[in-house]
Image 1 (cartoon, rainbow, N blue to C red):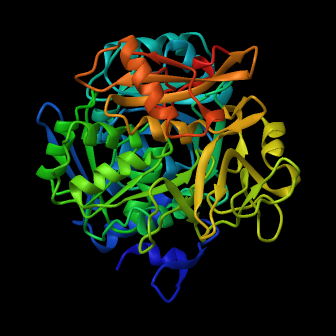
Image 2 (tube, rainbow, N blue to C red):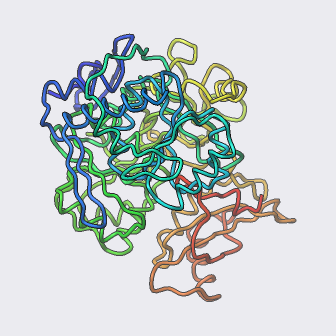
Image 3 (cartoon, rainbow, N blue to C red):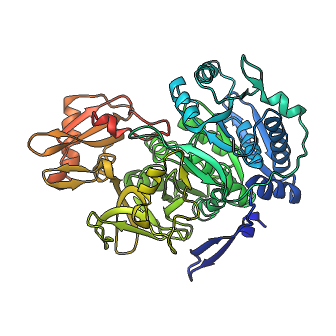
Length: 544
């Protein structure tokens, strides 16, 4: 039986769909001891992690392996001064060392700060100073080591730095130290409500914010894995995400291991749809989660022959119905969309057993009471647009899966909790059946000719044109309308930019939408400006 049942109480409706979900845990809950070590005690040979890379290397780890390696790593960190409450930045891409390093830091009560390898030296300096980082663990890559080394030399808080599979100037070799360390340690006293992990948000506007979650964050992802991704005990789940992104916590460790499902990790630098499909088939991956961009590439290139897959999900940005339709047509699998944030776990979703409506984020998960808040402060009725907000059941800011603080910014934390409710900053509308439909970020809403237009509905139509691989719709200054609507497009293979194609795409879209939503300008680009987490930087496209 999966260990997750020890930590929650569930009830279901007459159709077998999850209706209520409540967490239960001891005051000193810790994922490292109470999940990883406990599974290792009960089933030491149970598969936990399957790793391979583009060079043909492969490693398979059991829970017994992860338990031992994480204890050894915890002893290494402790021996070099890392203690409970210290912040440690981890830049390990998709290397398997991330998994035992993360668990080791949890066991110590240190705060894990995963970051992407794409950070520059200036980016790293900002994070070290903002979070008062004491330790760094990074991959053994010349450029990355250079950036990290430069950043450490410009700051004062870092006291220990490691790389993997070899030493480098200023960096200890974590791999050899872990091999030599003891695999026993006394349990560190930690509380479930103490900080466990911090993510820096992608910073679509302004500087990235440090989002801190406590140890119960791992438990809130039971719902993510079991009732959205539909992972199987003994199965193999693949979420396409680098460990520096919050999506890795959603799909590559916590909920999956709690539910007894192994995690598939394909270590690559450059995305190749055909290569990804080959890995899915080679290892018989049973469940799969990826952002809509991945599915766009798969369906546009016709690379969707993955017979081992039983269930597929998507999140990270809104899903275009055209991609949904093409994927279902080519695979027979229904994409189940979900919605959440770095600051939360799964807020809205098409849960297991429910009927998925193409393009809908689904309904509120049992963890949260969700409403749509209108500009006038009233909650929206069906068909009305509003901001997605979470209303605590008993007042206060304590909500399972919702972050506990913004690092060093209590004013911003109070602002997102203004009025006693949590404001997501995302807008949507709800249909008569209770399904939510994404409209856009509040800052992304286009005001044109007195109308408010959500870019996503126009992007949906654009994606139906065969020449459109990726698109973004923004508002640009216009003397007549206030803002005019502009479409920025990355073309699919086989199409070349031309004035004729611009006109064709514009007329294709405008003939299918109301006049006040018409596209006035089309621009072709080779690639979209994106944040380090892969989200399109519309603020840059608007020229702000």
